[in-house]
Amino acid sequence: MKGNILSVDTSASPQTDPPQRPWLPLSTPTRSKPACIFTVLCYNVLCEKYATRQMYGYCPTWALDWQYRRKAIMSELKLYAADIICLQEVEMDQFYNFFLPELQPEGYHGIYAPKSRAKTMNESERKYVDGCAIFFRTAKFKLIKEHLMEFNQLAMLNSEGSDDMLNRVMTKDNIGLAALLEVREAAWDNGVPTETPPLLVCTAHIHWDPEFCDVKLVQTMMLMHELRLIAEEAEAAFNGTHPNERVHLLLCGDLNSLPDSGVVEFLQTSRVSAKHVDFKDLVYKSSLQRISYSSTSERTTEYTHPFRLASAYSNDVMPFTNYTFDFRGIIDYIFFSRPSMNVLGLLGPMEPNWLTENKVVGAPHPSIPSDHFPLLVELEVAVPSPNGTNETRSAGSTLPPHRR
Image (cartoon, rainbow, N blue to C red; front, side):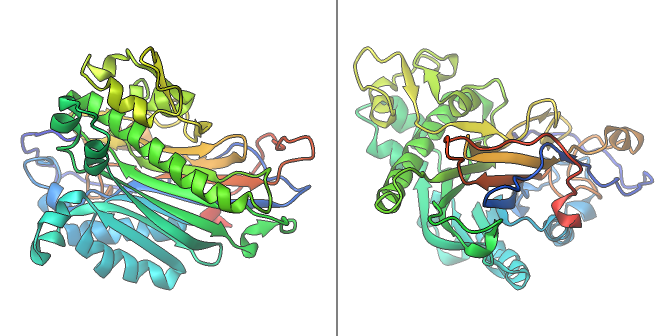
């Protein structure tokens, strides 16, 4: 969520480095059966072309410079050393000439897609278009297939004569990027299961403008519809040998939507009312019936998706994930499949006293390289018990992944 602000001179203020964000253990790993434990990081890195003095006048020019910020961003990525990294606002040139060369020696493979506007540009312009990236440790995961979801194209395909779908949704070129990953044997503790279902990892960047809450919700519905099709295709192949397991879904992104929005309600509850206020009484009904998992009857009262998702971060853990002068709120998320995954721990918030004492009115800041804070979660995928349930343990003294 972007906004304009008058310049505020903070360059002369004395600064101290922020304390390390705390690691919050939530449960302990399963020890009695095979389990895959991995960490995932979600981060909007604020690409160079959006980091302007007009937008972030409170940040010193030298600290807003991409050459300065990218070093700090990479230091964060290497510090947290997540097994899966989902990034948003990565410019094409920066992916191929900075992020990928920096992370490959650390044991990562990466995939990338720019926003749809890149298709209309020449080569020199295209490299500055931002998009989404997924990196994963090749020691733990192997890429089976990647999928690009272009919301403007999906809006056109599913418009069903809706002018609102064509005039509002199709004009926004946001994307989702997904990687279907095979879980390697090295990722498992306490033995390796006979069959290991794949992990479907998705990162998305939903439209930002608060005036287009309907577009945000429709884009999210199209995203979940496409993920369902991908999962069904993968499950059809996998279930031929082991019909009781399903694809695990991990959804990360800058959803530009607050916790009380229709977007988050839809993801967390698997449904949203056809009369939800976020639709703005616009004519989407026939279009959305096509992509809803539920009935396509004319009397449809709600739209659904088939996944059972939970947010890794509860609203009381992080007071905000986006921190600027004129907006502070939770708009970044990590969702995971339940009950097949369990959260072992997560990275806590920035120390509020440090922000106050150092008069940090917003980010970016000399000690904060983006206007978003990275989210980091440790997850466990466990083999179901004979009764079909997964074990859950109480919180213990689990150390942060990057300190093990």
